[in-house]
Amino acid sequence: MYDLALDTGSGPAFVGFGLPPASLLKFPPDELPATVPAPLRDEPTWYQPFNIPPGLYNQLLDIRVPITIASVYAVTVVILNRVNKSRGYKPYAFSQTRSFKIFVILHNVFLAVYSAWTFAGMVRAFRYTLPAWQENGLVGIVDALCKCNGPRGYGNAATYDTTINKWSIQNPEYRLAEGGVPDSTDVGRLWNQGLAFLGWIFYLSKFYEVLDTAIILAKGKKSSTLQTYHHAGAMMCMWAGIRYVAPPIWIFTLVNSAIHAMMYTYYTLTALRVRVPTIVKRSLTTMQITQFVIGSAMAASYLFVYYTLPPVRFVPTTSAAPVVAATGLSWVKQVAFRAAGAEGIAENVGHVENNLGAPREVVQPGPMVTCMDTSGQGFAIYLNVAYLLPLTYLFARFFVRSYLYRKEPGPQATHIHAAEKAGLDALKGVSREIQKAAEMSGETSETTEDEAIAKSRSTRSHVQDTVDNSPIRTRSSAAKKARATESQREPEQGFSTVPAGKGAKRISKEETQSAGGPAEVKTSNPFGVLGNSN
Image (cartoon, rainbow, N blue to C red; front, side, top):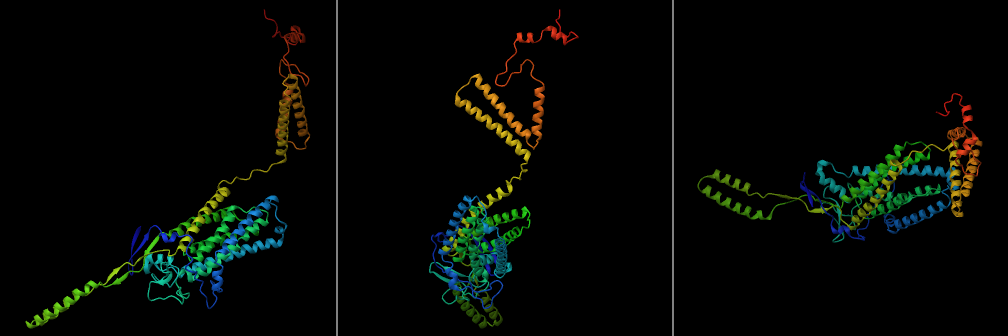
């Protein structure tokens, strides 16, 4: 274990980093201690406008509540995804109504305002929880973040001892409430300052947020795996953090509420058809990924942190005998000097001896304790980290697919491109059918090939006539037509024109001579360039 020595105003202290104790790895975690309910306020405040009955507080933290809701939610999403697929992902009729659109806007506005309120309340809680650096330095801040129950002050926290299953306070100046539990009137620690109330409400809000998925499904769309995993996992993680009073749950409540305030504001604007730049959505996704990475690292660090309690001051018992001996010896010396007439020396000897023999106070660092106390707190951390790691991967994959590898939309197909593509597809289809028919008949005679060529030419001519007669004109078709006309004007020399259905054949020498002799050539060549040379 690595220890960092610190010098505080009250004496030496240490903050250590090491492997978590085996007691935090127990599964299933211990049921004790029971969750400490949120404190009851005499008057409503903006950060706690109402009181939560202690019985209701613990009833909704029963493990069956989040498991049932998360399971029903996941199964329902899978079923409705298949239904939407069978319907061709068409929106339901009620999702196109004005009342539904108003509901979506109000839903997003409510979650945006609620998330901002939660964030403001958590900021206030931290303001009254974190001590000043001048008080005890780093170890005082570590104590405030690790221990969330009890009165304010380094070493004054109420902790749960798993060996005797009881709450205790190290400082004898403070006491527990009736029943041996932390006093709800204590101030200065994160639980009573707002985490107990705001965290519990934030836990319940995860059930309400499934309406996000319901809106997506109502529009006929598919709810992604990321959406389902995100909502179902958030229910379980918030439950574990509040149920076992795990201090790191403040990270989820504080940071996630801030991200949600911005995210649902964005959703509100899109529901109002306000154009939002893509960089805003990209930034929101980046912030979500960042909170997952930093949040999981911070939560996991709670398992490895140790620190010492306030220093212990005492007087060693071994110094009592020398003090008594020195006192007796000084009295004998005083009597001897007075007998010799040295009264002044006798007084000085007694004074010096008393100063030298005065006991000295010893200051030692307090006992080393872990940041987490119970197996339930350890379980809550493991569950949150196990949930955040895959979630980070899913969000990162979504970010890469949506923004990094996103292809720009190509130009829309015009009528010209459609006509060209139709003609080419028709020609390719005809060629494949002719080749398939020839292979099936098994005939490879010259006549069969000629017929196939003739059929191909006839079909191609028909397709070309269709394209030519089309009101749509393309530059490529015009160019092809011009090239075809030019090639017809210049037939290949030495080949005779044959009717369709017969192969072209080379003209023989006799046919050439009969077609035109030297006299005809000479007639057509008056200058005698092509005449016989002697």
